[in-house]
Image (cartoon, rainbow, N blue to C red; front, side, top):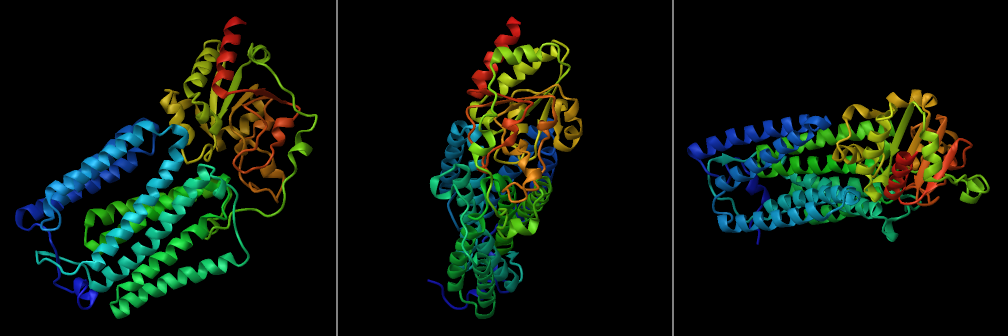
Length: 488
């Protein structure tokens, strides 16, 4: 039970139960090394060639930070309890890492963001409820700064947690989250919830009461749901990037609450890099950052009916016909999409590219920034198949040259090649830059069916005069095409 004013926990001279003397000094040095490793880790992950090394640096930095924290904290938990937590968490992580398919990785990233958010909420809440502080040499930050940081950790962390759960549900295409949901006056309700949460934070500052933190977390949890439910599946990559930023900001706020420098640094790095990525994604999708922040990203209006778009215009083809078209071409562009990940056909498409290159065909990959379900999804898939990075061309680089492409092979992509983005201002993807596959001399689209993409709208490209549909499983269709090419 909490005794007295909770602000007394943050009073000048109050201290954390941390180690002192030479161990504390070396701990600060270790935290600095961990922070440097985090920075090198993020820097390394900016390029595919150094991404693995960057990930290793980041992991080593986190391991160092955890070890230092365990050696410094005394009188809170036993070493045995901490080790049990590490082993249990490591075992869960190992199982998840080995069993989750690449197609499920965006959902997992969303859940990781959510777990980071709720962890910050729990850390801040536990510190507020701590009945007393064990006297040591580590002096806390200013009491009001710590209390305000606790409110921010609760607000941002709770929004991140529930928002990420909704995002994961949308990515998993669960029925209850499949369609965007909004109601009249929702933005007003969102504003009231946000102002209410900030008001509760100020109440905590002025009164020293702890119970408003619970009300704050509940209001923020509802706000997280309402911010993400109106956003359509086609915009989920942007939402994932933003939630990633939120999780970092919540962690940084929690770092101020407990006076942990490395948590402040790591959270700030994640928050800043996530916000930069969100800005890049917004530009790639012609979206406003303000719309992302306030959950307004769906265009209004109705899209054309699939029967109206496709009726009598679809031209199916076969692997043998496509092989004949590829005989003697000079330039082929492969456009990977989410269907490539579903079929796990990245190695097969790399084999097709190698076969074409052996016949002096120039092969390139057109990469849309939001192809798949999260930023960089296609890059990761193709890197797994050892596709040379030089063959991956970003949208801005390859779009002006599509008219010079002999054959564009689209594998499981839909919304990112949909011309409706440029022609229908009422479409959910209106204004989103697309790959100009429709300008290629011939477009081959490999799909199981004419089912719509994540945006839920038909694609006129499939009915275009220069487009042929190769229906079937992406991997099997490529295997058949490779066999037909070898026989030709």
